Image 1 (cartoon, rainbow, N blue to C red):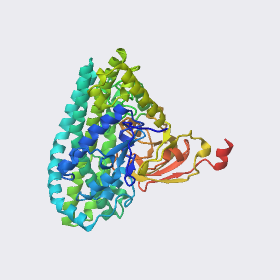
Image 2: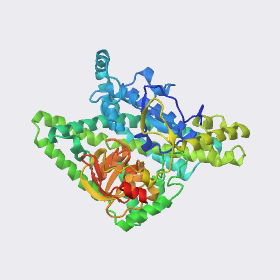
Image 3: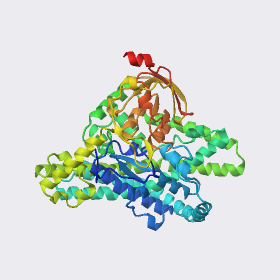
Image 4: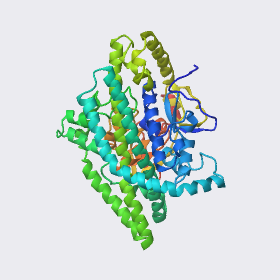
Length: 552
């Protein structure tokens, strides 16, 4: 099927490298035109402004470019992907890190697989800008770290007021809310970009400290845990209170209702709209007698302090000063990555609320056949002329885009590629097609070794974890986080050292291997597996033998 002029399908230069890793964690599933164009406008603008504040992008490079090959992201067959060439170029310009490191930490790509070697002239030009970038980075990082929590609180209050308590009742009011959502996303997204890059660089420095002190980077996770104040642990703490009758559901939803299954996809129903998943989670917490997150934080804090003392004991006076500075800055900057994410997710849900109001109104007037058709209009169309368009025009546009969406949902698109992805028609997975794999290699992001029963879960609402179960999942948005407390270990298909799932796993002290690539495909549900969160190795002790596959 030929797709032309789709808002959710781009064409790439043959040399541009792309990856869905990390982006699929935040923006889940095949995107509708409204969902992707809202993300694309707000995210591209925010990220480029953040890079501009750091001095990594020049003033001329800050406005979003027209070509996807120059952007930070694009959508292919409805699936968002990060532009590895762009991120590599940005990393090459940053002091204290490089393009390979940025791409590896964000997307899990092996070093040296993206980007051509810099010429001597390019290296010199980049180094000459280091002083400017360093001064800009220190200034922006300090300013944004100071202001991001108040900004997140302000956005949270705006969301509670505008979405939970007094949602819009007219098209014009909903259009205003939609524009505010994009503007607030850009504001906190710019802060988030700056602080994420600084956290990324500090994470690399912590890994280098671990390598120098312990002879391996694998123990770096012990130095990046027990920080406290991570957004998702607040959700878990309130869920624990809900499960134990200490917090009413109405208040939980007023605090965290912007989360929910596939919350980065605008048409999805979040907890604010459907509390069924919350009741199921609360029952599981009560049944399993899950510990309070404060207990876990104290344990992880002690692990971090012990590792820090071990490092400092083996350093001379000068290196101790540097190590203490790196560790202190890491503790200040790595956790705030999740603060910014919580802020822009409030904005995504405000956009969802606005869209549903407009959809209801346009369906009532006959301009749309179904309220959910609103998600097949673009952000620009919705805030500008779509509500005044003729019914025939809108319905024809929606019909064509729905057909594209249906087609995209039946495609398999690779996780990474160069040029344009080769999409194939998806076929049902049957046991006979499962490779006879006995071992997987990913990235160990929280150490320890656990043997247990694999539970392959594709939707958090379907998870029913028992004692000793290891959660094997494709990716983890914040709605998955409460399940971390119920799992003995985690195996996640996509992500990197500084992705959401990795940060939360370290904070909770859950053994975790991320970027297993095909764990949900290759690990049979119910198999006994061993997860080594230090080395990144996953051993399948009971894979289905070929004879068993063919006989079943």
